[in-house]
Length: 141
Image 1 (cartoon, one colour):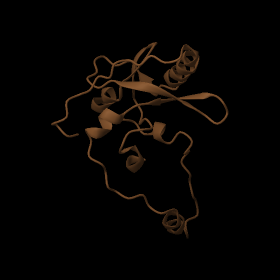
Image 2 (spheres, helix red, strand yellow):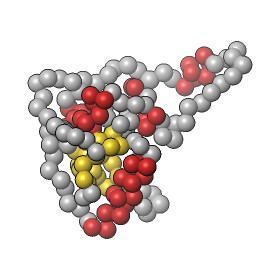
Image 3 (cartoon, one colour):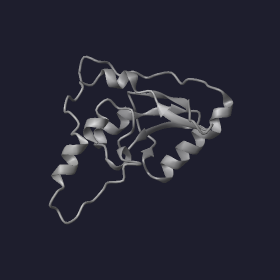
Image 4 (tube, helix red, strand yellow):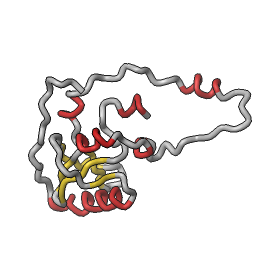
């Protein structure tokens, strides 16, 4: 993280009250899965953004624009899929990681968890596992 950046606490955005059940449902799901927790103190606070899905439901995303600006981009390139497949040739066993919730399988360092704080109508939460939307999450995954 670039030390010249000052932490940003975004003010809570108000959105259509019809989105509240979708936000509450997503927060409850993340709490049950133990992917998020309530932070003790957070200097970085981001808002949630509701994005329409193709099936007519709403998806909750977190606006990490300010946090991403404070981090340098990891320039490690993704391996090409053909290289990954070729590297498995000759092995007896091949294991696949569940890519459906792949980011949420990577535990975040405790000192970085509170930087991923986000605010909803229900309260303030932070991720214990790698959230989708961070600049270097793809390189880590």
